[in-house]
Length: 154
Image (tube, rainbow, N blue to C red):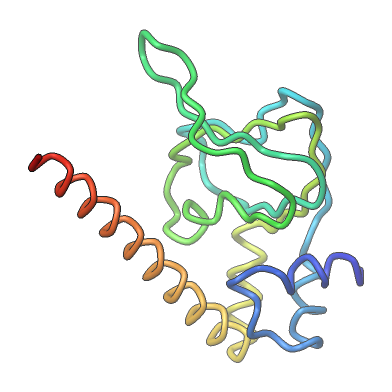
């Protein structure tokens, strides 16, 4: 469990948790393995768990009609993915595919929500970290759009 705690400690949304809180979170983590090319999830499926890469890589992609797969990112160990659909209870917006064999830890939405319901201090810390994370992503998107708009003017 200490290895799981160290992986969780490295994630932005859990960085404010103390050792005891991380241990509680680690209790609901489940290890999973995927062979190279295996789908971890597919676009359109229910978003019922989030994942953290322990070993290997994960390719995040979408299927483009008439063109095939478009790789959006290749995630490395320590990266979290699948969290958006867990937070907003929506369907998966992309495919996640094991790239060369992958070990992950996963947390189901139901167990994560139950932990946050019963551990208010953990919920407070995690939710503020999520707000900071989403604000950072929005700033990056704004900066990217600003750059695209500036280049289109020339």
